[in-house]
Image 1: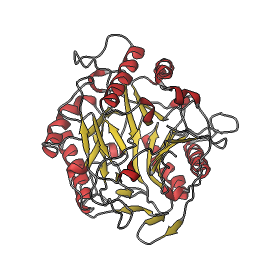
Image 2: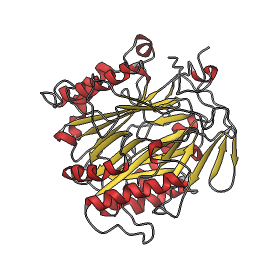
Image 3: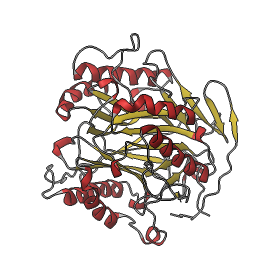
Image 4: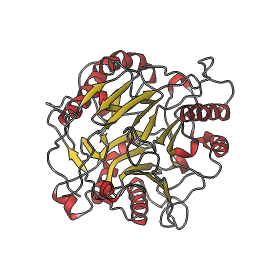
Length: 444
């Protein structure tokens, strides 16, 4: 792993019609279909870049009426998955091309009912999965489901590897297994892991102890999965921490710093992944913490040519123009994506929370994101996915007033959830995934 203190990029931006932005040789491609609900807000149903399609989180909306479907959580879960299927099929893909599913429920007790429906959509292959209960969902829905989908042909026209890449799945007995999810699914240059609960893989039960012991077990499970596919722990580029009680974050951080950095070379440059911390209203098995990881896959999935596969480098970057943290890197790039840490409405000069309401805080979050994006020689048009966490879901209209000034074309895919609390008592937190057209280089 090579982790330079600076980042050199050479972007070339050519704007094309129909929400297609060419960045170098890859296209940021936003697409919509009438067979799924048209976005309720300034975002696209799916945005493709390189070898992934990033889908907006789907609510249980009937695309013909624009209203929530009648019924309970089963009917709503089915509609969410129907909407995902319609989007996936509209871009000439199939449900087995999904590598990761995230299920947000309003009531954790509804997960069993959701699973009954889920099994009918994934009868053989199962993607990696994260399940979490949150305080609120748009339109007062009971469930919202998000998918990350492969893009085998890529967005490089006529690339030699187009349409040939293979999805690789893996499970190990050294980490908890589930019939509803695969531990890790690799495609192209990324490994997507299922969120790990603090389960002892031998007993199948939660480990004894409090949040520190549970956090350690989550990270041990992630490490076991990575070792099973011969990937170092420091190849993690993004971590998402779901906490039942946000006040537990300091205890979790005590454990977290014993795992990151992991290797001598990572310690030498003080490398830590990008990170987002999310307050969950509840977690499966009544756990106190759950941790999700996105991991680089340097050799890629076959049949990429050897010279295009090996030795791709992780690039980490921080800028003084956005808030810094010793526990996370502002942005970590690998191959054709930049993964940004969640941004709070902090003034980077003072480190203090911005005064004002949700509009002012939204603007500061997006200013921080813009500063990070520009520090790596990219632009906001390179953002492919936005995740918004709101303390009050009713604030979404106010958020969108500001949001549209940063994303007037409405291209990024988007997810919005309501949470019970945010770090530093913020009203909003935003993280993004950004295209990286030039990719990251191979080792010399």
